[in-house]
Image 1 (cartoon, rainbow, N blue to C red):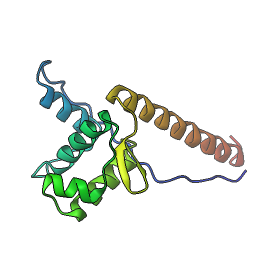
Image 2 (cartoon, rainbow, N blue to C red):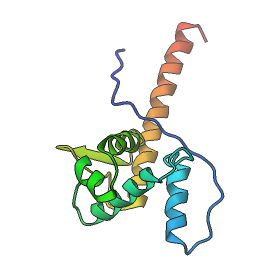
Image 3 (cartoon, rainbow, N blue to C red):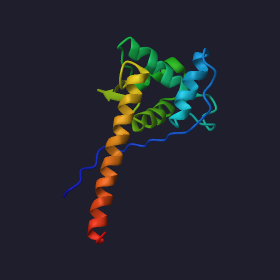
Length: 138
């Protein structure tokens, strides 16, 4: 059986203590950090700022180019592209004609879609493991 490989995906889940309810900024930071998006090396929180900009514009159904994001957030285009790749690999955003949006209109829907991606990934890994076991006589 031939296997088709899709765009590389990289899912990271980190168990963190939930912030107290009521502080939207902390909750958004926790969500992104739990998905492995924001780390200590990102000193100016550029990935978080890009995520928020995409969140705001997705809710308005307005995709943004990397140049628009760089201009609005006063970041280099290279920095924006680096973080867009990370957000794309994590299944957070989609691109259409070099314009980016969150993958769904709500964060809950984005998380639901990521869960489906992870399930498909595990199912594919299990299938290959089963094929290998069969070849090894297990």
